[in-house]
Length: 316
Image (tube, rainbow, N blue to C red; front, side):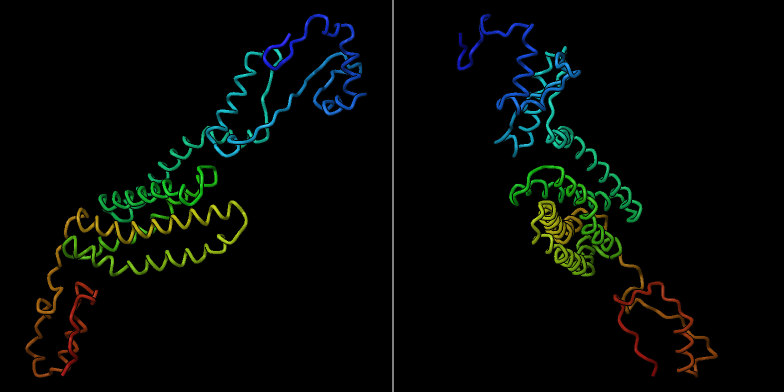
């Protein structure tokens, strides 16, 4: 009888138990068709009358090789198929399962590691910037950069796998460099929010841009490689640099000018007309050159940063 396309043997075609081992040994060792299965059966002893283990091979192709979600479903599905036959201790194994096992935890591991790295970045920025709101804005920039990288991977021909996951984690530490310098320059400037954002961009915008461009130049050899890992690193780092510069030089200054830390008033004496030197003693009034020298040597400028001051004329 048949069921679909498979033939089901009847009682007359079943090999008697007494002759089973003889036929099996003859099939494996003395036939062309059976020779390919000889290594798939392990006998308990030389009598070939007891089987310790056996192997059934199968092939996988198509979508299972390109879709990680489908690969995990295939692996788990095969295990579910053999699970009812626990009496013979079946094991489903393929070398590629070593990699597919990683897919089963890659999402949870990535999220956990990203959050841990972001927390570390926030703590370090909070300590070094000494301003909680600036640290929050830097963390926001880092998060936006990582989200943009993850979403843009599709458009540069990359899939979510262990190699790209490593780069997503690296982006947390690399992208903070583009944001924290602008934030520090903002905190060091004076004036309104708009003035401080403008001054920060003038002071360090060019340096941050040059840093990104030189880093990209160092990555160009990776893009010329035939290695899959090197190509992935080139594309991912190009995204990190591109989105890092975009958010650090364009987005963050705008946010700082709108919702950055509160205005920092200009200190008294910053301008020339407010800058008063102490008066000279009466005994030195008739010695203008010497008196002027003494005044300038003894006077301690409260703000040694001369970028905001008009130059003082030389003694007459």
